[in-house]
Length: 183
Length: 202
Image (cartoon, rainbow over the protein chains, first blue to last red):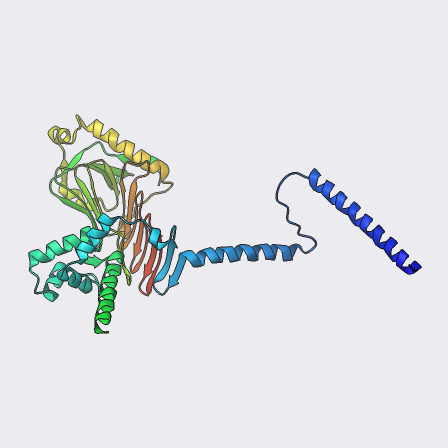
């Protein structure tokens, strides 16, 4: 073995010994300091802060993407607790809503109200095939199901958000079934 | 103005007919015939009343949006004392001095008993209100309706602008702009559109 190689091995051994000593010192320092979370920010404090903020922002953005929908109609926040199949449903309430929808005249009323709030006489004019008393009872059913709301002072009837969603659902389902029947 | 600047009159009045205290396109406050009233004065000038009898507040705290209406109307009937500051002179003619029988119908043995109740309401409200003044010239009104909580329902109205706060609703309306906050949503609406933040728990 040449002298050069022997020298190199000796140098490397010393380096390993130094590294071991350095490691022991750092371990002792870690044992001595109080418990907690330590982030080694090194010399680049700004970079470290930026990295941390970026990571937090990414997490927040991910969560927001899952729970908020921003559309032309506004910002909607969804708190999705469980997948659709496991969602709990109040069948009695659902049946009440579906029952309110399950009448041609009531669907027509919702369609009329979708273009804006109306007084009962305005509805009466447009839906002349429905008698006044029947119209009142239909409106009551729709109101009880939360699909329509009546102003207490002016007396106009307005379609609610669930009402509009229900009308949309009825329209889509009908279109879907009709399209399938045509195939 | 602080409560110490206001005084309750010694005379207890009663409505000799149904009276509309305040009315707008989307709200109304009215009292039934025989409702008791005690005038609130400041520097000898009539500023408002404390009423007790059958009163009603109707307010359409509903916002119309492209995606449907949000909110529901407020329909509040009260038989507890409630306070009004505003154009009190307008209804003076519809009130006359209450008799003992009329006081007893509402449950008071004498005038002082009703006055004490009215004072209690005023002190409770004015203690929390740092400043309160209703200038009749600007057509402003303040209504305070006690509820089951420590914080009463408040209706402020000036011209067509309305601010209403109850335990679960805040409604601000001015011309075509509306802000409504309910336990499940917050909506800001104006002529050009609406911004809605909803809480939908699925």
